[in-house]
Image (tube, rainbow, N blue to C red; front, side):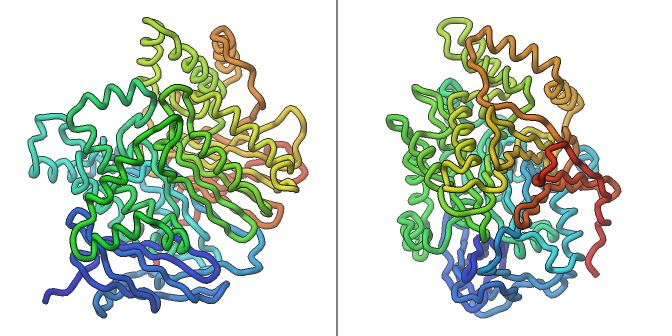
Length: 559
């Protein structure tokens, strides 16, 4: 009998004080062993996967681990120049010490020289190389990928060649991805880079999707969904996008207790151990896409605790309500968010693939456009076309949801929601292809500092016209003009204001949020080792803007 081989992974996903989960893909059915725990693979669409739940670990420890398939050691690679992959559990007295790496919009490393010139260096790849030479105490505690992990609608030349060999690309949607098998190629392309592979095997990783994981402008509006539904290829494309998201991203976001209670996971394990579970997941995906009376039946949002730091990651794509009252997330999801942000913690971190606080001019334009889209006749149709053409679908374009989130964060920052105010509330985002830090200010002073921290792209290009547009959007003149336009459209006054303290930065980079006690800062690490990293303090008595630039350590290969 042929031996099983490792196709993707291992990827370290969830970690707490005594347990961890490790995800991987193999080329055939087998038994997978990781750190004394084992699990059989399950089959989806002809591919074999395992999620191994490791329990009984000691708090505050760091243990090296191997991966064995049917007893044969397959990881770490014998020729690896990196330190041994490790599971580092949380300490029971960890407090609020935490280092969280985050970013979004990572196009797979392009092997073509022209593509490398266009996209530049990969910031996550560069960080992995630097991390390989760091002392282990300096490694990040977790990595949060905030969307566009893969680009289903902007495929690389390698993926296009595979698609052309499989089907007729003269018919729509051409060289875009259409079904599960082609989605698996995207994940293999983006996660097989040796540097990234080691990083993901060592740093616990949480993920959430954005539009390009499915299709550009996914769920922009009801009109967008109606237009896409007319394409005969769209239903399977969206369904299998969610199937692949469940397999490659969502499953690892769940805690061991959530996995044990998850009905879909149990069904997939049963069907996938003796047959193929893809139809189980397709039924789940079709259910997830439905919307009944303003309710979404499936929640992809989740939360994790790192000592006294709470991370809450919100699905701002699939969870949208587009029929009737337009909402970024449903009432039931807002209730979940409100409940999940209760409790005792020192710092709250909210992950949203889309920024909550945008450049001021763009904020007002999106809110004005939303009002115009609600009009009947030609004006409404024109406004909808503008909405889709210019991607006007962030939190300000769902103004009621923006205000509701602002009220919730304000209540948390004042201590009304939790009994005592945290030191900071930070909203981490990506999507907009420029990076910045902005501080929120409420009409009445709040004890907690409230921040919008945006890091994008990790690896993608930023056209010159986009750079110019975002620079203008942050200016006071553009903000004043856009605010007057919004007022003429009947947009209500803002419940808060915000000031940009760093950026806009237009380069490939990854951000690192450092929290310790009541202090904290965020550092934007560029992909190029010769460029400067930008560090912005988030706490302290001085509310003036303080940003310092330091040169990133050289991206030396571990020896």
